[in-house]
Amino acid sequence: MTKRKEQVNPTRADNIFKKMASAPTEMKLFMFFALATVITQFVVMFFCPFEIRLAYAEKMGVSTSGSYMFSLIFVFLPISSDFKIRLAVIRWGILSPLIFGVFLCCLMYLNIIHDGGRFIKSGYWGLVWSVVIPILWTLLILLSPRINKFYENLSNSVVNPVSGFK
Image 1: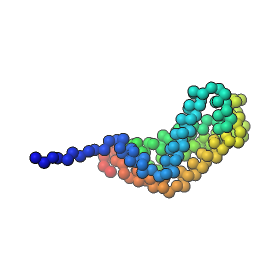
Image 2 (image 1 turned 180 degrees about the horizontal axis):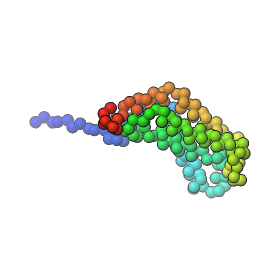
Image 3 (image 1 turned 90 degrees about the vertical axis):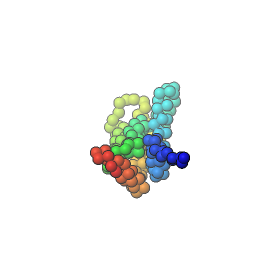
Image 4 (image 1 turned 60 degrees about the vertical axis):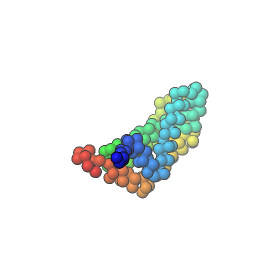
């Protein structure tokens, strides 16, 4: 009797990890930075005393995690999905929350929007964290050919949901 080799089908998690491993370094850095920002702000705002929240808001500025949180959805969507998603949808899904966050932060720093809250008033480091760094991420995502190629390859390698074929 000969032993028959069983084919091992990769699980969905294996496919996701392979896609994540093939992501360019810039995208991995963005994912790590965005996750760290979201988790840090969540922990500080919900589990730390008021004095620490106030010190955090004075140094880091207004809520920066909102734009990163919504951008992460569009970063992980094509990686975890089996459906074909156009590159423009992915790119602008990542960039539009960042650009909108920068726009709102600029309005707050120019005192066009002001609700009288103590958390809006912050120093120049708040401007760096809520305006300059998201602008740098936006430029990196827009201008990186490796990120564009990664998402193009990802959209070409997934299954078409209508026909079921590649």
